[in-house]
Image (cartoon, rainbow, N blue to C red):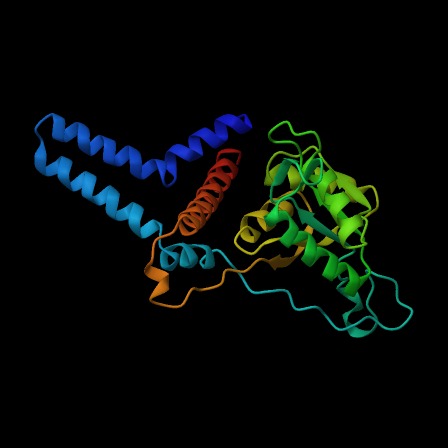
Amino acid sequence: MTVFLTAAVAALLLPPVCFVLAALAGLALLARRRRTAGSLLVLGALAALTMASTPYVAERLLASLEGPPLVLPATPAKGSPPGTRAGADAAVLPPAAIVVLGGGIGREAPEFGTDTVNASTLVRLRYAAWLHRRTGLPILVSGGRPFDTRLSEAETMRDALAADFRAAPRWVEGESLNTRENAVNAQALLAADSVRRIYLVTHAWHMPRARRAFEQAGLEVVPAPTGYTSITPSPVAWVPSAQALRDTHLAMREWLGRAWYRLNSALQG
């Protein structure tokens, strides 16, 4: 399924389009003089759209996807290289690389004169750089060209890491178009360097699906989630906003993606 077709199908199933379609169906029923059913459908769609636009609903949907943050292990003994641990825990090797997934791209950003990372990707890169400074582990950046941009997501991530965080990645995977391809392509690159266990950096709400994809690709994953949801205090949490509607869309898209991955895995045996 192409990127465009996937996006189009998802748009039909997710807010706000799904609520608009429901309201239009209600109007069609009203036009056929089915007033009770039509009125209920229109009012229900408008009520659902309003609720989906509140921070209260959006933030709790995102938070339902999030797991606990990473707690770094004890510092390895002096002189031990990255990826090894002295003492009783030596049998359980810590990760040997940091994999950070792209979260989108700023296409032809005029202030930079080229493609660059967007805000979501920047959040992930900041945490990956932080983790790199504390572990000394090399970084793999992953993300392709879903919308035929000049640079791949991975290339913009490489440039931002080097210029803004002084943390040039060792591996640049710029061919993948979705999370599953991120996992498969990253595993192929890391296998060449005998890397099997990784820290995986992505948004906390995206981590469950990403972790599953990477483990299915044959990697051992230590989740390193970032970009946790902040809960808006009441009564502001009940004031609808475009940002909240976007977050609801994001959360429902992620739930839909998880369901699709499970279904696809079941169909493939």
